[in-house]
Image (cartoon, rainbow, N blue to C red; front, side, top):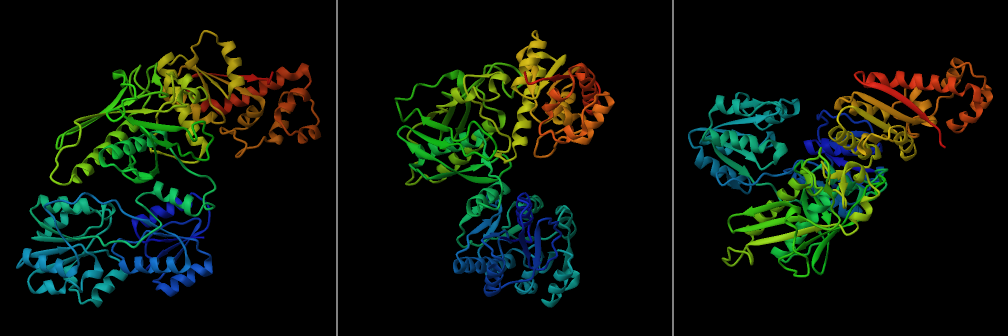
Length: 621
């Protein structure tokens, strides 16, 4: 069993991650007032001290705690740490993302220091506190020198707590989470604003920017130091990965990393090794959505490497090794090919330029329709941006860490080659040749994470194929086959069409037809075998056996429509639809297949209304 300590935005996101597992879990808040919709989770409320929390964990068999409580809930964090040690239960801390500290903001440690600084800056003026209702009593000392307003939620519990602390009701400013902050500053015109270093989800950036823009002094209470946790994450992907590691049986399927994330990680590892002489077992990688995850890396003589962390989706790239070699350090590495340049990152102070090149095993585009023109290296826009962003962050951190007054690095330029030694061989078993990517694998990925749903990865591959078909062959004719057998038959039927005009849809007939409609194809041909055809004829646009089975009653209906005499007992005893090829008398096969094709057309036509649509029914042989 898993327990989330929530009541925050992070708590809500943690629950969303756990809902994906369709497993029972507990979600705990102090007051029970957070509006959250749980399907598989059970919401419990009320404060728990160490003994109560330990008893709860024992009673319900809690094997993992996700601490997603507010960063300033120091007592709760200490309680969780104590109970975790007592019961030997691992803890994942779901931390917030924090913006870089601004020089114009007064950062203080502790309430005493905050009151002192606020009193000096706001003496005889208005002070606005966004510290929350629990801080009202501690700020009472400011009332002697300033007019203090408190911004709190309009919850019944908050209003009652404010009253218990002796707050003047006329000094309470109620707000809702989704309303802008600036109007409050305009109406109160404070000299000083008080806030907690609460991270991006606490709206800190918006508050600070609005205050500084209006000349309001900002005093920020520094976030407290957190107790030790077995894993610290700051986003949903990292949380899922941590749960998969610490509670392996919670999720039925494992997530993985895209080649883009792996390439970024190995690049970061190589540069950290060269600049900072560090060979950590993992490196931080910032994903496109701003979340940071840790990726395992390794080191060998002359290069850093990453073994691709795969999901439970079928993936021919699982376990492949990506390498990054710094040319400036290792003369044995061949000089990079200028035509294989991926990106360059330049830092002015101290100066350093890093150029990244695609090496062995990374393919190149030979057709149009991709992020970059042919014959660029087959690395998409998002992975390139990930590499650039992470290198910029690393250079900034490394420059800040230069010691002893040294303001330069040992070199002013650094060339790095990323390679995939098995890439050319593995690429032959992927969609790449069909897409027009030759010579190796492509480095792709939009989110940086491969979620363990085979359909998601496969449908994305189909979309890319349809896009390439449109660019390469125009919008005249798209030919869809369920797999290799049907495609061979279709190519024989349309020998003059280019290879890119043929796309395999697997089980996702409906999704592929919608893509064809979006692409504006004038003619669409669907090749299909009987097993999938009887499902499609019944209106099932996703023919995967996990979700649909053949409807034997509907098959009997189609046989009746075709006036084919087949025993209902024989139909009921079928295990595979292709048995119909032998059950239907040869003289009546054409009539039966016409009916099947007609129903398939009826199911598909609404998805591509502008196209000339045809169905080709294909036998195994």
